[in-house]
Amino acid sequence: MARPANDRRSRSAGIRPHGRATVLIVPHLFTPLHESCALDDYQRRLTAVHDAVARAAAAHQAGVDTVDHWGCVVKRRPVDLSELAIDDALGGMIGVTSQPFGEIVNQLATVERLLDALRWSQGNGAQEVVECNPSTSRGQAGTCSHDLVVAASETTIVFEVSDVAGDSGNANRKMEKDLATLDRCTCGMRSSARRLLAVSPQSGHWLEARPQLATVVTADRVGNGTWIVELRSTASG
Image (cartoon, rainbow, N blue to C red; front, side):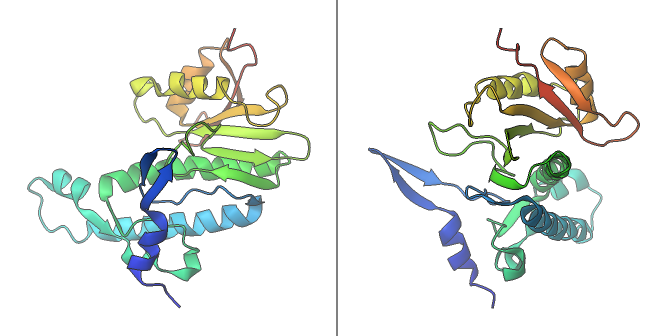
C-alpha cells in the first residue's frame, strides 16, 4: 500500500539536533544510502528509480503548450513526482514530491554516470555498496563522505561522480575540487583504497591531459559514455 505523501516527506526532511546547533535536513531527489547493501540489488533499485523519474520528466514537456519563453518555462516548471514518492515499488528512494525540470535533467545525467560506476565496480570485484549520495556529495559533517563508496574483498573503492557538459571539462573547477576531495579521502586504509572519478568525456579529456594527477582506466572516445579515471597516489605531492 502506498504511504501518504506527508508521511513520506516527514522521513526525508526535518530538524535534527547537531551538538548545540540545529541542522535543517533538506530532502533530496534521490535519497542517500548510508547503510551497506548488496551492489547488484542497489544497482537494480537505483535503475528503476532513475527510469521512473526519467519517464515523468519526459512526459512533463508535453504539458507545455507555448513556444514563447519555452525554455524558461520548461526549465523552472516543477515536475510532479508525488506518486513516485509514495510508490512502495520504488522503495522510498525518491525524497521529494516535485522538482524543477532543469534540476531533474542535471541530476539524472549524474545518476547515469553513477550507474556506470556501479557497473564498472561490479565488473572489478565489488559486491557491496557502503555509501551512495546520488543527489549530494556530502554526508554528516566531519565524516569522510563521497558520491559512491563500494567494497571489494580486499579493498575499498571510492568515487566522485559528475557530468560536466562544457567543452573545458572543468567548469567551475569541478575536476579540481573532486580531485582534492579524493586526495583527502580517509575511507578505510588510505594506502589500499582506490580513488576514482566517473566523469563525462569532456572531463575525461581534461584529466587525461594531466597525467601527473590522474590515470584513465576506461574511456569512451566515440560517444558520451562514462570515463573512469583514477587519482594518482602522488597527487598530494
